[in-house]
Image (cartoon, rainbow, N blue to C red; front, side, top):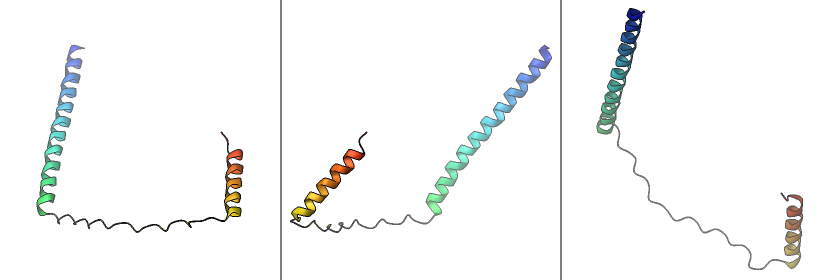
Length: 84
């Protein structure tokens, strides 16, 4: 039983060692590729300067009283139907 357990531990350590070495190689390969892309890759495009946004059209200065009353009633009706 002891020899079987020893083989199992050896196999586990070897497997974990291979995975660890593979991950270290992967990290260095990724770093190397990143440096190569930054050195030999195309330059990053320059972002255009921000342009001011267009002014939004303003609402009419005066609203018809009948229209204002209809809007108030519609809002009241909506709120009464959608109470939580």
